[in-house]
Image 1 (tube, rainbow, N blue to C red):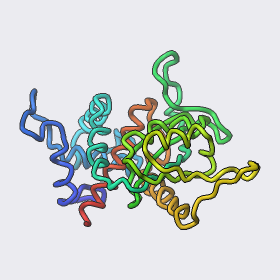
Image 2: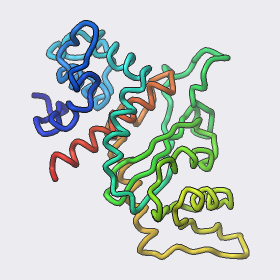
Image 3: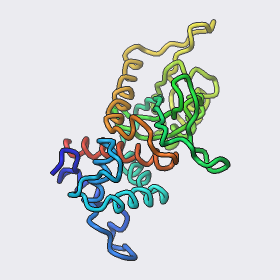
Image 4: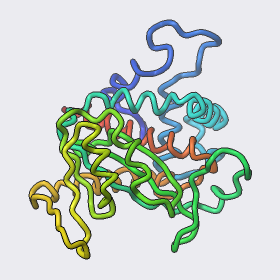
Length: 257
């Protein structure tokens, strides 16, 4: 077994969440789900091209087609959301991280869907937004172009927020609109003001230090090389890849508890 393959404990967590796990699968029988998932995780973790997938995982077209087809159907995001629903929800940390876009990710058709790639100081990039809980596990994910303001993703990140949650963010979210959205969602906002403002709002240091959890979460997600560098043209496919990396964080955590 490769060091990137699902363990027995991880497989027991993810298997019931796959399409057709309830026995109502229709159409032709699928190839070994576990082997295909291991193939997809190998590509995401190592950054290898699909065509260079080791033979032990079977045809690379099987792995790619499964990844692409389920990304289009929203399956990967649904599995992630099913795991994220297990979060206790008392603390919500929101932030974003820049992801460099490889030249292979550029060149999407104009006039089509938003590819969530923009040009910033570092060149072509995307911005990955996330909300994590008190254990540093991702609960919500969003994607935007690299030059977009952080506050634009706030509505997506606050979806499903548990009432009474403490929402902590850095000064990049210092907008009255952001604070109002947090309160409307039932949370308590903890967002410090920028230094140039006359009226200063501070956050308890012990609470603000918890932001380290989301920085560490981004770091763990970017251990997957196809997350650290974006190769996918379609925003849908890249966000699905991030969801798969988040699924792996969840399965590893739950398999050890």
